[in-house]
Every structure is written in structure tokens, then in C-alpha cells.
Length: 326
Ligand code: ADP
Ligand code: MG
View 1: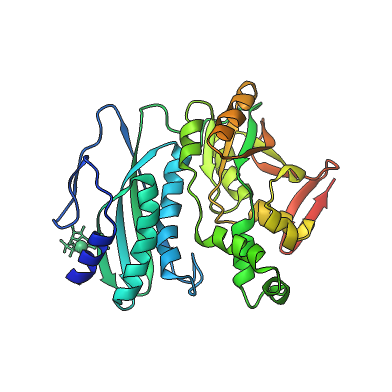
View 2: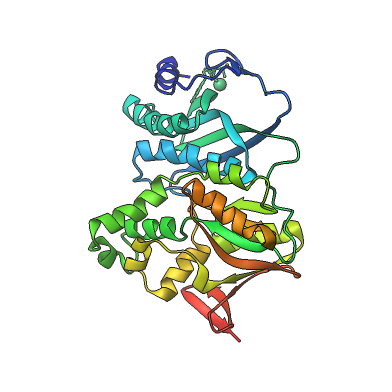
């Protein structure tokens, strides 16, 4: 489609890599996978009003579209290399595309990811990104390796992005209170929604120790459910252990906070399992790269994810809070 737009994209996202033999401009890119590496490939689409509020700034959207994809590579322990960008735009405004690609390029530069091609079409706003990374054969972090006795950890803090979304929702019952919250508290949470940090270095550090790993995109319990299912195990999580940011603690009481932490999506932290004997190594290695990790539970024989309160009762998510089961 519009040649100028592609040219605009090409000139604003300029990470150069020797393994890109031919980038944007031909019918296909030509890429050289390093000898002795597997290619890790993943794709994710963001649709306006479904995956992001329509008010989201173009620059944040560019960042987020790449971030959610890099997060999938992080969860595999892969090192990112190349990306493709499929843009569907209601109208091809230069300003939107320039801002969008600046946000995309900012994150791409941080991780040395080259934009090697894509597609640009007209239609309701949607952004598809495909990322490629490298990982040595047999060393990728997968969902199917957790074993009973392993400990469960999560990087960073949970629930911030979902809290940020609530801060933006004018229909939210507590919206007024949230609007009146200290601006830096609100901004911290909204930034976690709009500008997630893909945990690439943490994924790499976990390559030789984690038995299973997943990125938290749909909510902790749902995502750990994928590990439980693929690994054929049960997982027990301690509600009191779930890490919370000071911004989340400042704005939400425990019950509500727990909903955000356990079921809120879009945090893009890594949840992972580690054999108990390696737990100390993991926390030390992650601390060294400046990424906190919190022990939140354990892997058991069984087949589902269960959340426990401090008194030992099981907590079951309900529409607006929690049901306690003894
Ligand atoms: P074709 O009709 O052969 O698909 P396009 O006009 O769609 O050609 O694309 C021309 C070149 O521009 C290709 O190299 C393609 O990869 C690149 N391209 C198109 N849209 C984008 C985009 N949104 N981001 C990056 N590269 C793009
Ligand atoms: Mg095309």
C-alpha cells in the first residue's frame, strides 16, 4: 500500500543486524539463522477496543505491540532478533504512524530487534506483530516441564496493568476515587498497562534452571493453568505471597487487590517453576540482573491451580471478589 508510509516506517525503525541479508523493500526478507541455534517464532495481534483502550496514545501502542510479542520470546528463554509488523489502519495518517513507529522503535532498539518487513492495509485499527529469536536446541523454557516438588515464582509485581485499566475506565464504580488518586500513583499503574517490560534478561537467566515458564498475559491463575495442564501437575499459590507494587497497595484494599493480582492480565511478568534445590540460585541470578522474583507457591501432584488464603482455606475467584472454601 502507501509507499510513503512504509518508507516512513523503514527510516524511523533502524536497528541494523548482520544476520538480515535483505530487509524491508523486496517481496520477502532474507534472514540468516546462526548455526547451532533454533529459531523461536511467535505472533500476537492487538485489536482496538479488545486489547487496548481506543484512547491509547499511538506511541504507547507501538511499544506495547512489540512488547507483548517480545514477552513471548522471554518466556521461552529466547534472544530476540527480528520482527514483522502488519498494520491495519482506518486511515493512513502520517502522524499516527510516525508516533506509533517511534514507540515501536524505542523498544526495538533496547533489544536490538530489526524490523525486517510487514504489511500495511486499510481497515479497523489492528496491529499484528511477529517476532523471531534464537535459542540453543534443548534449552528453551517450555510449559511442559514442571514437576511435583518444584517451587513457583513470579518476577516483578502483579495486578498493576489491570489496575491501570481500571484507572482509565470512566464507567468503573470506583473511577472517581481513582481519578482523584495521587497522579504519580495512577500514572505508575497506567504505564504498566501501556508500556509493559518484556522480561528478556530474566528469561535468559532462567534457561538452565526453570523447569517451566510462561508470561503472565491473561492473568496469573489462568496462565499457570497452562503450565499445570501441559505438565500434568497441580499448582498451589499462596495469596499472601503475591507481590504488589506500592501503587497497587496505595489504591486497592486486599480483596480487590487480590482479584487484580491473581486474575488481572497484561502484566507480562514471567511465572516459572524451579526445582527446590535451585531456588536460591534463581533468586540470586535474577537479583544480579535487577529483576526481583518472589516465591508464590509450589507444584504438587494433581491437575489444577488452587489459590490459598493465609488461614489455609481455598479462595475461588467470583465475579466481584472471592469465595472462601474451607
Ligand atoms: P507486497 O505487495 O509485495 O506485499 P508491500 O507493499 O506490502 O509489498 O510491501 C513492500 C515492502 O514493504 C515489503 O518488503 C514489506 O515487507 C514492507 N512493509 C510493508 N508494510 C510494512 C510495515 N507495516 N512494516 C514494515 N515493513 C512493511
Ligand atoms: Mg504486502
